[in-house]
Length: 319
Ligand code: ATP
Image (cartoon, rainbow, N blue to C red; front, side):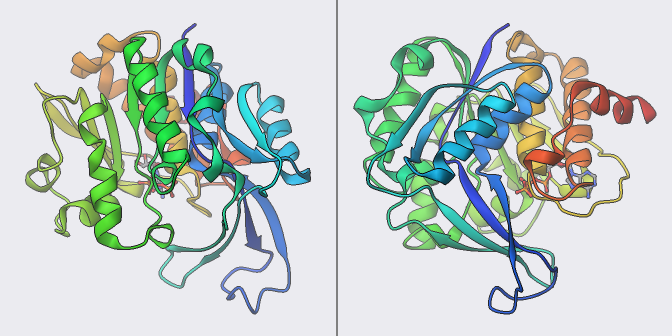
């Protein structure tokens, strides 16, 4: 089985024990491990795939706790470094009245931002059949250089490059800078997944339609995906495009749905990149990815809500 190597941040979200309250009003917080690239690696492993995480954690109790979680889920940890000085990143998260999440980050700087190019496990990255990343690791040096180098090593070694920008506006100095840096590596990826919110942010247009999505298309791409929450996803390739609807579930917390969706897609294409050229098979894989995303919304938190293969197949076959 081919390996999915996921690069970037892993952190702890602190989530209020009561819903609908502000951070100041929250009577207490629960630890919810996350970080999109780490979630994706665990999502792949949950589905029976081979996955590794590459990133930096603090050499503190939280950092070792997170490394332990990756290990517990069977994600290879040879790509993890520990920083002796900086802390593991934390984020306090609230759900606004409109359902969108709001983040307050503690990264001043956090260990993940301090990963250096010479700390990369090159052999591990070279072994990737799929190399996945986001954009948070592009925000500051030295992590930015480590990210760019890792992408280059993976591409050179023949990996498929998968990119989920996973926009966190609060972490960027400005919207313009976010847009510029997110787009600066657009042409390197083979597969890109954006959410409807990111489509609007990157294009400047609120239209969730083919014409607007196609402004993000490049001929360097093999697949462009736009996730639409409960409505499923749209897909674009050189030769075909369409929509795959999601499943009717009782959503309680959408955290990690996108990562679950991406993990499922990568777990399915890692051993057969030709799926990307076959619309019928791609639609089946996207239906499976929708099922995984949908299941993840039915439980609180991201990682505990990621489905295994049999849970995903049960929903997949029910429709
Ligand atoms: P995240 O909340 O992790 O940032 P995202 O915004 O990247 O997620 P979404 O579009 O919310 O991604 O969800 C990803 C996929 O999960 C969707 O394409 C869909 O297949 C599934 N999904 C999400 N929400 C629901 C829902 N309420 N009902 C059914 N399926 C859903």
